[in-house]
Image 1: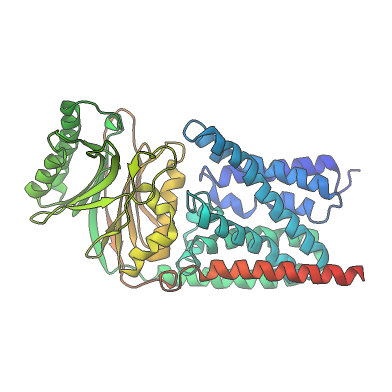
Image 2: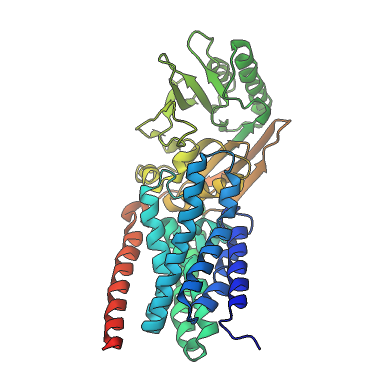
Length: 470
C-alpha cells in the first residue's frame, strides 16, 4: 500500500496541478479549471513531512503551470527575460505553497483557509506593481468565463478574482485532508461564496442605459511594421477605407481598426486622409491605429479618432512592450471624448492607469490592438476584466488575435478570430451603463488588505510556532 506522502504520489500530484494550471491560466482556454488546479498538490503538500521534497515538487508544478506563458512568447521576448520567468514564477508558487503549509501545520482552521488565497493575491499584487507587464498573467483572469463571479472585480479589481480563484481550491483541499473540520470549512468558505454569487447576480440584473452599434475590422495580411514605400502604405489604407464604405450601409456608430494597421512617415501622403474621408463621407466615427515615424527617426504608436465635422483626436500609447518597442516614444495622457475612452493594446494591462478612465465616467473603451496569436484569447479577456472593474463596455480590435465586444458586466457580446489571408469584420450592438463601480471609487484597497493580512498571518504564525516550541 502506498503511503499518503509517498514520493511517487507527490510527483503525480504536482504534475496534475501543473498541467491543470497550464490549461486554465496562460492559454485562457479552460479558465474555470483554476478552481480545482491546486487541489491535488495542496492535498499532498500540506500534511506531508518532507519539506525539501515538497519545495522541489512545488517548483515542478509551478514550472508546468506557466509553460503556456513561456511557449507563447518563446520567439518574441528576449531569452534573458524567458530565463527569469522560468526561474522566478515557479519559485513564487513554491514560496506560496511553503507558507501555506507552515500555517496549516501551526495555526487554526480559519488561518489555514486564508493562507493560500491571501499569500497568492498579495504577492501577485505586489509583483504587478513593479512588473513592466502590469497584471499580465494574473490568476484572476482565468475566471472570466464565470460572469457571476467576475462581478467581484467591480469591488476589488482582478485581485478579488485571484482571491476567489485561490480560496475555492484551498477550501476544497481542507475538505479533503481535514475531515473533522469539514463543517467549519464549508461554513466559512461557503458563506463567503454565497455572498459573492448574490452580489454578482444582483449586479448583472441592472441592465443598460443605452446601446451603441460598433464594427471592428482587421486585415492581418496587411499588418506590417516594415512598410518601406508610400504606394504600399496607401494601398493598405485604401483597403481599410473600402471596407468602411462596405460597412456604411449597416450604419455603425463607431468603427475600430487594429493597432499599427496604418503607416505614417514624413514626406509621404498621409494614410489617415483616406480614413478621415470615409468618416466624413458616411457620418461614422472611426478609430485607427498608426505606426508613425517621427522626424528624428523614432516611432510613435498612436490611435487617431475621426469624428465627422470635428477635429481629429490623437492618442499616444502609454505602455510600450519592453524590447519590441524600444524605439517608440511613450505617451502620458488619456484620451476621453465625452463618455468614450481610447487606449492601445498593452495599456489595458495596467489597472491603475485605466481606472482613471472610470473616474472620468467613461462608458465605452475603444482599443486598437495587435496580439501574438497564441495569447489572443488571454489578452482579450484581460481587457474584458478592465471593463468590469470600471463599469464600461470594451470594443477591442486586435490584429493576429480576436475582435471582441464585451459589456460592463464582462459578458462577451460578440467575438471573432482574425485570419491570415482574408479581412475579418465583426459588427454588433453593445449596451452601456451609467455609474461608477466601487473599484473606481476605492481603487486597490482590497489588494492592500491582502498584503496587510499576509503580514499579520506571518506574525501570528511565528508567535504560534514559538509557543509550540516552548
